[in-house]
Length: 378
Image (cartoon, rainbow, N blue to C red; front, side, top):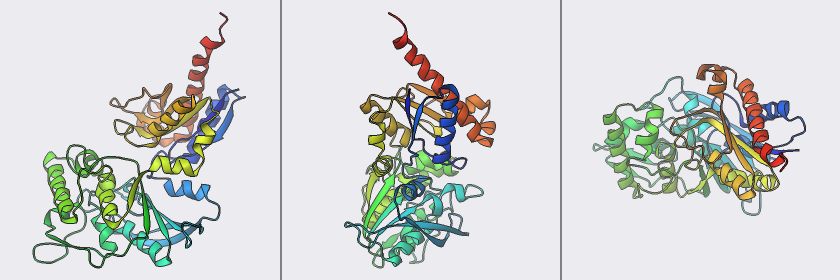
């Protein structure tokens, strides 16, 4: 009997991590009915992080709020209040950038105007409640505003040469002549969960690597935003090369300025849900995400899970919506692409549960093939 730990991340915008794990289990069981499954849905600081905390912490309470979304429209969302502990006697607030300023909230990409004001408003709401600690997941950002929208909502001023407030979003970065942090709200302990380690600027920075995903296409536009982020770093007196400062379009750097400590999101969530103990006696660990690409080895859930599996002597396997040509799959004993199984990306996106079940079955067959040589008579 094979013991299989199912620990996928969410498939952004299509299926939750918990539903993805269930579909993978169904598919595997169709090939190996006797398999034992342990469900540990994962997150790494991006979409699904709040859901992972909510599922894992008894007594967690949703706190409804309305904030300015990344395009400026009002959206209803929530932050999560965790019960008091010795370390956080007034409770811990968990805030998710994806549900306040995330790219999935946009009807169309807004590379110049999208911003992180909503995240700052959610943080302010948690502060108003009086929490002792904040945990902030900053994946799935819609903008490359350097976190200026977030800091503005917390009291910072970003001013042009005439002393007027600059426009929101990446559009305003080039105009910033001075920064006034005198009214910035005081931060409690802030732990920032991020799924990337990129610096703020340069060829691996927020504009160059993540800007195209948010609509920055032309090289001149990317260079302009990169220059704006570099200038912002000078004004905020922060190292643009700092690991993780480029996360969420530079929101990582802004949260460090506010006093936050960046932490690998996958490791934090894994500790919360007891993932290492679950994997300790597993034969196979199945992980996954919507797109496994060249960035996926840089702090995201699948690569982290592969490392845990290797340490436990288990086979790591991957199911992903798509696996790009630049992706390194050498960490995995087997990998399945929903796009390949479905025949097209559109088909995979239309029925993610169906094709995750197909992926689970394909990975089970791969596991049987790997086990066959060991079972053959000598």
